[in-house]
Image (cartoon, rainbow, N blue to C red; front, side, top):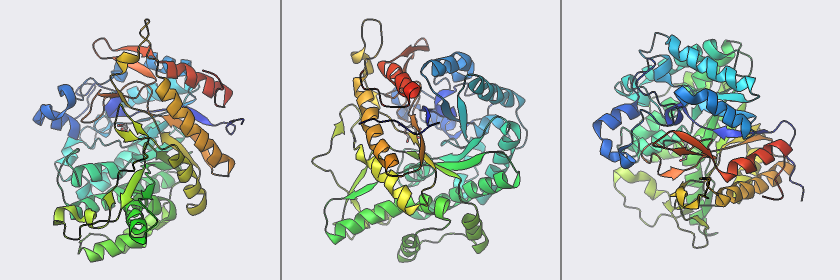
Length: 462
Ligand code: GAL
């Protein structure tokens, strides 16, 4: 079968400011919540590697952009650091303006479209200290930051993104301990989730009012939920997982309203959320132009066998995880690989979300200990990554040929990068980063990707 992709398809990679830039405390940048957490508890961070240097893109971006060009990318998504652009929340940091303008200009000069995200888990410490997404003042500050970004870079950016995976800081910070504030509290989770959505919507509204050229969207990590069996209880459990982890953001950003089940949950559990009708109207009137979807793994779900769970773990009443015995695993990362999930997402968007234009904003394979796959010239022979992309793209292609309106594919990621509490444990890049020297070394997958981007179809030989 000829796996040709639509004309002008976006081929590229995604990254983020906090994971790539480095320069954590230089160039006028203020502290983020990650800088603060590392100061407080460095032992929580894998091999005690903090967010100060990461992959040093701040100093090496010119060379890096040439590497991107060499790998055939026609687009690249990264994020602006809020704490760098507005260190005190009011004063624009001219060094940051210069840096980002130069990055976006160099990308364009090399035929690479910048897709620019405003928030990738990197709450300025100053605002975290005020309650982060639980405080409506932070929503207003985000709107102002978005406005400043549109004013400073609007002439260079034609696709904006408000948030990357807005549910992750909620899930990991309020129902888990992988992000700060590392508490287990459903009410706080839902309030912070609601204010995150409101911040997104206010940024969209500011974008529209400013009469900027271009489009604005959001990037969501969609994890299709598959029930253990056809029993009603399992299907109901899978629906709850879908509502909470996918539709809680997907429905309001595309359809303009929350799923009915969210109201049901709030009532059942007596969760008290602050909101106004005016805000719900704003949500209704500010849906996105396009969607980015991050897809790594599915969610396997079964009915809960436990009605009596403690109040910190309310969700366990609604569904529980299930290990599918037939799952194909990424042995280097412990995540299930289920390529068809991408097709199911494509069809779901086509049928239930107005067939809105969307692109794969992240998909990729993390591998621990990649040096064992190096050849004599130091190039990682990452055939497993090529297969991973090939298999996902085959399913994506089927979704597109059946009418889903997908306009691009971005692999996570360009260059091995720093990853929250995992740092450089799992490598995802098409280029390897040598941590000691900051040297970049091409992996086999970068050659394959170039073929793919150049021919706009899956390479038949590699
Ligand atoms: C995503 C996230 C990225 C990166 C990736 C791979 O969920 O957006 O920041 O960490 O996972 O772990």
